[in-house]
Length: 188
Image 1 (cartoon, rainbow, N blue to C red):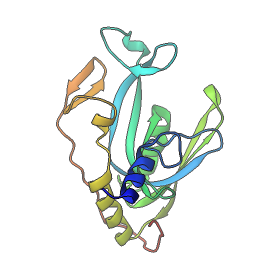
Image 2: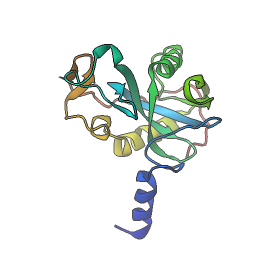
Image 3: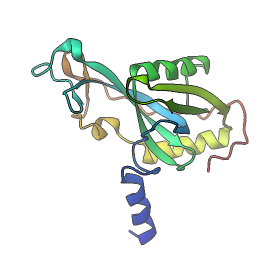
């Protein structure tokens, strides 16, 4: 592996920077990206100091809350990253998904955060359509660099965490459409 490739990998996988694996927004931050693939849904609980996966043997089911994670091509970092969100934020993203014909892989979406603690509000909005060529490039990047969300969240292969704990599920197929409405964005 070359030094350039090694440095690229280090930047991609380092946390706490604008090019880390996860997108972490603070008050006033935002990002624009193209969401790819299906969401990972998992149940989590607050243990008094941090969020941990829900375990029916250790936690009360009514305390569990869903968390949603998706792969996203970050147009600023120009790489695949993971965005994890609450049910409320996912609900807003779902509205954009539905309004765009049940897909997000052909549009740029903006996510903004305002506030901190319990006063935090996320805004989710469609910014622009992307062209067929850019959608195909994003699909190619997702196919090669997209994160295996089950692995990233340390779930056994073929499982998902939901009410009642870990369950076996059918593996999700990675499908990214290259159909778009408008061309001319500069994602690369």
